[in-house]
Image 1 (spheres, helix red, strand yellow):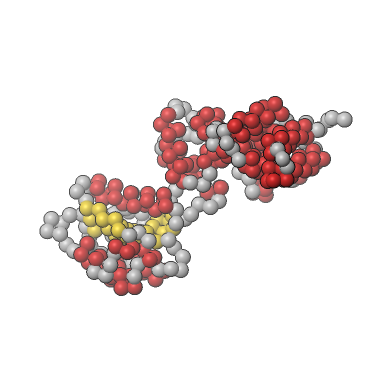
Image 2: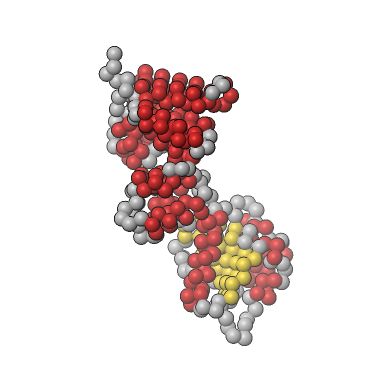
Length: 329
């Protein structure tokens, strides 16, 4: 969710939306427009790119109307405005009109910083729309989407959705909306699996989960299904590597609460609980054997062998056996 300043009145004379996350920038605009049209259904909205706002254009758009109509003027990529146009905008910031809301979308950073500083100095409402590059940020985004939709989703379901769909916020938002519309009651991991199990990331992690749990037959079944639906073998070796490394990290970590271990190992608390269940039966030697199997499979699927499918099957079986190594002679 876009972060907002304490001054959060959508119909403030000037709003600056700062960042490079397109979905959040668009939502910042939509919020202002919705508020304006709630106040006046005939609000005139002008949505302009930086090259469309030439010197003098802003004065024309913000000139008083005979009918005192409300206007929203949106300027995208404000950091790219020409020097003369920036002067116009800065002059307007000093005396904005009551019935007009100016929305500046700015990427942040050094380019065009003078305009951004001027807007802030003038007391503009600010909405932060940072690019979400960290998995934890996308996970928080999904949780907030379900919360905004008035729906309950388990932590595992939110993580599964991120694992399945990746980093595209529009796709994540659309998926959350679809699930909220189609499903009654709490949305759990099984529901997400039914909807998105065909996605490459989701099916890859299913293979890895079954393998590190020692369920060789199910892991092989999931592997063959994934390959038959076109999942790239490198995605599967990556998921296997993540699964085994998580076992190794947690088995060598100091004991403690999931929240403490999550901070130490860089995993969400719910994943700590899952990996704890998966690591039963593992030994340090088993982890070493499994990591070697993953490395061999990775070499096999990247051209080091003649049969990538066989390389993956061999790795899955080896990992599943390693998962059951504790107590065996």
